[in-house]
Length: 419
Image (cartoon, rainbow, N blue to C red; front, side):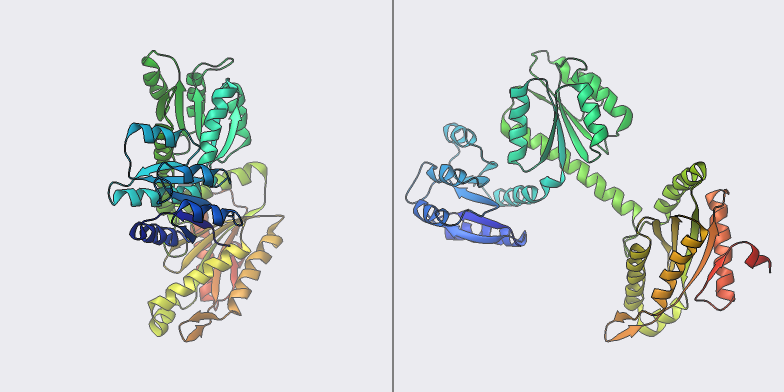
């Protein structure tokens, strides 16, 4: 079901621009042009994800629509042409998401970002650490206004426990002055475990000594805020650090993922497989490493075209996710794939591989106006204690044997190759 946005705006051109922005973010839109319309709409319908509110309307010039919309629990962004400090303070004294001066086209680009953040911030969890309940609750209220998930802790020791319990925390906001473990000690402990690419830390302090910002940064914090801070600066710092983390995650995903199939690429597979294999060997967990190749793939490209060939590779990736969800899957390059699986025993693992091979063999893959049938050859190594590079060579030798023996089959490295 689509999220709904209430647009309160008497200027038709501006309302049209906001509507286009909202539609680009998949919002359904309801427009009101004055306070009377707002009151009429909200008397029977308050199911809105958010609202944008023009400060001055034909029947109210002093922001009365803001309180009206907020009274119905609708998160609101104020659009204003008034730039004086009194108006700004009046807006910020209310629990709005943000206010945006209507100065130029940048205002609407910023509005789009704010609405996008409201849709996505619930995927970001922030840990707030402060021994003062009033200070802690104030920060929590500001974060929840922006739709973040929030966890709290009373001191540094408790914060480390929360970090161990909740693996999805992206940011820690910590006060300096706390019992048991202060904010700088906590930051130092966090950086023993989490890199800047994994977790952001923002230090806060009400102390007048200016050296605390440098101490926080030198001990691994990403940013610093002095209390009391204004909500605008707070949100800018939070958003900047969250966006930085998300951009790093996108870069890392692109660096480790095959662009076509969204499986791990060769580099990521080798890095992850090495650590997993060591764990399997140490814990005596049955496992196998398999190399997979599409039979006669060149013929597919020559007959149906490279777009159809790409479609075949994408479908194989889908089947790999279906059959090997708990395993490590990768496209190594071209039509060659790999999978690292663990399970009950060799028979169980062999059956999983063969179920995958057989389902591919009986499937028809849509490609434009036609459909394509393909088969796969697999070479597999079971429970080897050799280095990964040697196991890959052994699996590749078994794969070559599967091709030589007629394709569409699994060959296990070992006795079969000695015959």
